[in-house]
Length: 81
Image 1 (tube, helix red, strand yellow):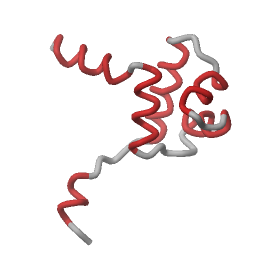
Image 2 (image 1 turned 120 degrees about the vertical axis):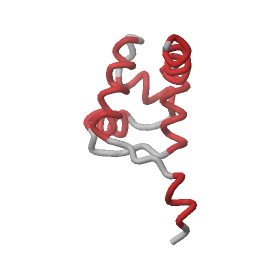
Image 3 (image 1 turned 90 degrees about the vertical axis):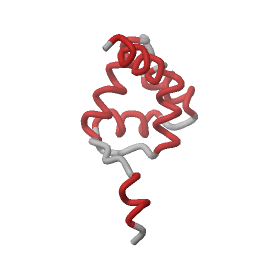
Image 4 (image 1 turned 60 degrees about the vertical axis):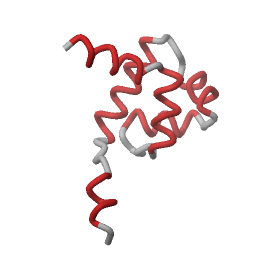
């Protein structure tokens, strides 16, 4: 195992990630179907991510961030601190 690659991996809590995605989706007043269409995945996939049954990979997390503008919110809150 390449230790350097292992150290660079982030551990993702699927429950927390799902809750954050759901909260962001609801704040944007999007349905599961609308979000799924925007990220080009099934509504079942979005539901499974929101419930913590599936953990999205990095590419999918970026797709969620892009649609929900989560990355921008993180940057803004970091600069306020």
